Amino acid sequence: MTITATRPHVALPARALLACGAVSGPLYFLTTLTQAAVRDGFDMTKHPASMLSNGDAGWIQVTNFLVTGVLMIAGAIGLSRTLEPGRGSTWGPRLLGAFGVSLLFAAVFKADPGNGFPVGSGPSGISTAGVLHMAAGSVGFLSLIVATFVFASRFSREGHRGWAVYSRATGIAFFASFAGISSGNANAVVMLAFWATVMLAWGWVTAVILRASR
Image (cartoon, rainbow, N blue to C red; front, side, top):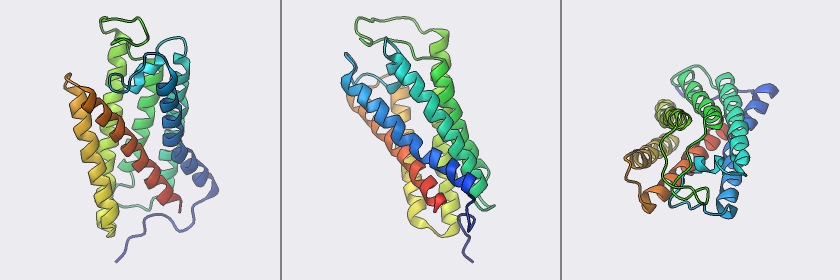
């Protein structure tokens, strides 16, 4: 018997919430990549996106975290109202919601400057805010990784093998790059791979939400 992925008729409020979630990823990366291209001293081979929260223009990235975090939480709520009961219908949205909450924490607790960004900054100790930022990021990224496998299990049960493979591959790639950057020995290749897999993972979130909205 085929298990329906979503309820046959998605109510308008739920569609609006799903739309919020769907635009969160594109908005985040449009804002982040624009800053990465124009802010003096920022280098994607050396610096994670979180470091854009520093400097005179740091408020842009802080706002980016806040807005996209709220949008992601809204999308998670929309998914919880849309998915038919079954495997992953509870924990899938919850994990994506946790990812959204981590973005709010990332806005409140900024990453420490360093490694030449903002221009003129040198080695410095890790602040309490920096530790909390890293903790929030770790929880958020791990929640997103687990979500890919939760939805992969749901898709497999429904018989959607392509979606299941897509979800698992996204989770594996993201976990590998996250482990690489967390090792403390991140070189240019590892850093760029991390940027790429974050985009991949958020693109997966957008795809899953758009699928639910249909």
